[in-house]
Amino acid sequence: MVAATAVVIMTAGATTTMSGRLVAPLHDEFGWTHGAIGVAVSLNMVLYGVTSPFAVAWMDRFGIRPVVLPALLLIAVGTAGTAFMADTWQFTLLWGLCVGLGTGSLSMVFAALIAGRWFTERRGLVTGLLTASSVLGQFAFLPALSWLADHQGWRAPMIVLAAAAAVAALCALALLRDHPPGVHPEPVPGALTRAVRVLFAAGRTLPFWLLAGMFAICGATTNGLMWSHFTPAAHDHGMALTTASSLLALIGFFNVAGTVSAGWLIDNVDPRLVLSVCFGLRAGTLFLLPVLLTSHVSVPLVAFVVAFGVLDVATVPPTIAICREFYGEDGAIVFGWVNGAHQIGAGLMAVSGAVVRDSSGSYDPVWIGAGVLCVVAAVVSRRIGSSTTSQRT
Image 1 (cartoon, rainbow, N blue to C red):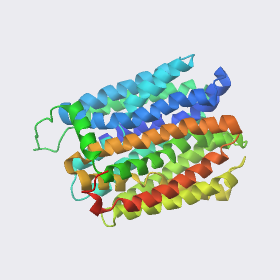
Image 2: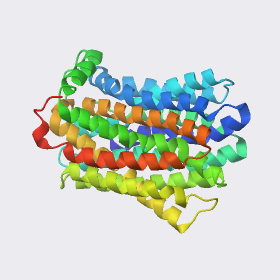
Image 3: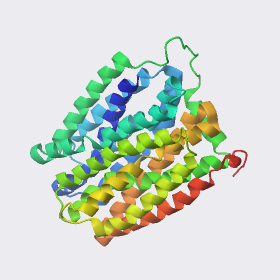
Image 4: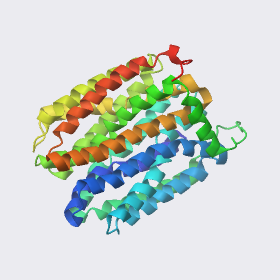
């Protein structure tokens, strides 16, 4: 189950990080502004987040494969269609809507569901491993897809991603199962209403809003920042697009180590402490980035990549653990809504970062602002104490 789930999650992850790689070629070929491109990217990121709690509820009601297979079909249609588009509204429909819905159904919330259903003793470690598979998909294949875009045009990776979604669908059809052998729970009725009921119930507690605010900042300073703006920002300094994409892949490589380590830590250490330390250190790396970006790859820039990579997705396992601590069996759905806030933050950063770039001609203010947000998140993380369970907003 871990392997089959990882294949599906990696496929979705490989699709999500292509947003930043598309900015420059779409701007050059069609003359679209960074802001216009950012609208579609923002919609993609927001749907990636808000779809997940409904997807988890649907899996509880209808089973895993009846949700996973249509999601992979949406990814295939969206990526293949993007290769043949000619206008911004088509990009918004295909990349923003179709790909956003498809990848959102197969996000880290899906990983949380599988870890919760199939594992007990090493649940934190498995959560880390499956989260790492998402990160691996997001970054490990980016250099190859970027190289393909450089040599065959930006449309070629879209076709490859569509084919990958088809292969993942075959794996899901053959291998994914709803529950461990001998476990046959009744389907949970009212999938849509359950997701909304959980939201309203959690929304009456302070921990939910602290988690949502903290994770919105997390999304803004990772997905919204790196996926959308690191590659074009490095290109602004004269760095080749493929080189910048390779640095993103290196971030993804160290994501795996950081995420698995965080998963192990939360089995032994207070997850709030893990969150606070991650955000504090992430702030330091972002404050330094404006002076590190140049036309070439330097040792300090590689050090940034390593540090940011370790910290990037390490916030996910402790956040899942806190959701499970406060909300029990509804923890995966609550995390879905918290992850929705994550993607709303990412979408806002995707658009606002592009607007700042268009208006000021530089991404430097974006890096500094993101660092300040991380300082705020480090403080908020420590406020999610166990004594807040009964507090109301």
